[in-house]
Length: 368
Length: 260
Image (cartoon, rainbow over all chains, first blue to last red; front, side, top):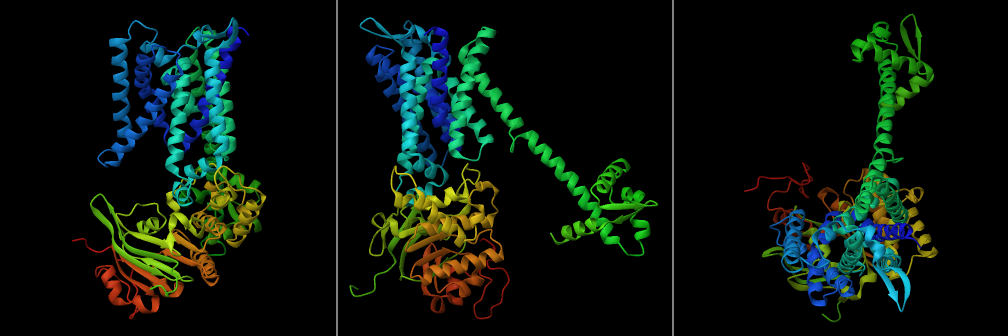
């Protein structure tokens, strides 16, 4: 396997592993929590590094995951005092933990492989250099193994507890009443987010992890009405962002992680604009169609209300629409043309008559 | 008291406090099986908290709750729950049938997946609330009344003996309200016990046969004919009630009143 393929493979696995717990973060409105966790775990990593003196130790992952859960607990404790709102609590907790990590690195670990830039941004391009070699056999890059394991854990957890996750996310009250401890599910999920973040931070850095966790699920949310599909689409969008991000980085000679995150943003914007049901273009179109439809209804009702009355000779005239309905002449003409096409009105010497269809339409509008 | 009939819901000396402020204060409640009970009281009376503490969702500061003689934790399968409609996110990516099936999760248990039987039971429940045509609809497309009926169907598949419902008539039109009431009365005639947080004092007599008047303390609880009196209503709403049983004079069901 050459390095090029290895990097894309790692990118794909990282993206897929991040997208899965990300779906539940987005649905639980806890996107900010991934931000907090991804920063706060730095302390855990640094402290564990001081103990083990080995950046590749699995103990680092455990320590970091533990720090992630502590972050969640601290936020919740602060929130529970009711003196601080949840978003403020998040904003208070993680910078403190993060800055302790930064200070520790700067003060005591400045000359080792653990530097702040690597933590923040990661470097996917170097991932293939760190390989697992057992008795002379090259088994491939370590990051690929770590992230595959994380991905597997995520898949297993979601597959096993799919029903419980769904219920606890949709209706935690019923989940608790039925005996599916939402607290247990919450903390397990937060542990997974932490583990995933730690696993991914070496490759993409602690900040871009957030993009991979939140953007693909947020995009998928715009595209589907089913949780299963949302999970599948999130993973797909994540993987596509990863691979296209790699090629973008090659093309621009820029940071791979940065380009991957950029691609997640681009896909999100595409989704926001062009999602079939919820995209802004679809919404604008529906809105325009509704307005047009509404104009026809208005015309029909106006004509209907004055039909067969003495004033109909003056009211139900083309030029009168402008004065009484308040449309400008051009618009009135457009509506009229449209109404004639739809067989709603007939015109005779500038006077307007409802057709049978038009009369029915007005009647329906009035009983609504 | 040993020879007394076993109560569907029994609450003894229940006190719930948020920090030091009591939300429920020394509540005693004895609800016999097979009644349809309204829980009424002003805003902030603790109606939702009462339901939640019966379900073990809120930790009491004191007191105990028994469902058919045993703590809730041992009787989960006997109890069905309809939370307030606003308590969930209706934009959640899931279908109507899926939501109804959630009522079966307790019976299915951890990890196992719902099967064909669960699906069929959910469909039957949807038919009972006349929502079968919406089974595959995404839940965000439902109106308020339809959402309420889906929640009701979800409770029906729980096949519980005791139902606790938090404002099932909230945001529901008159026709749907009648349909829901009929369903609740049907549950009662099956011998089930239904406790409903209710806001409209004017329909209490018509819909329910049992009532609990609540305002942090339990003012009165018993058959509607006995305890739903002007005096008790006055006590419950601290004189700010605009509904009178005797005169049937109806202004608003609840005056918002001048806070002093």
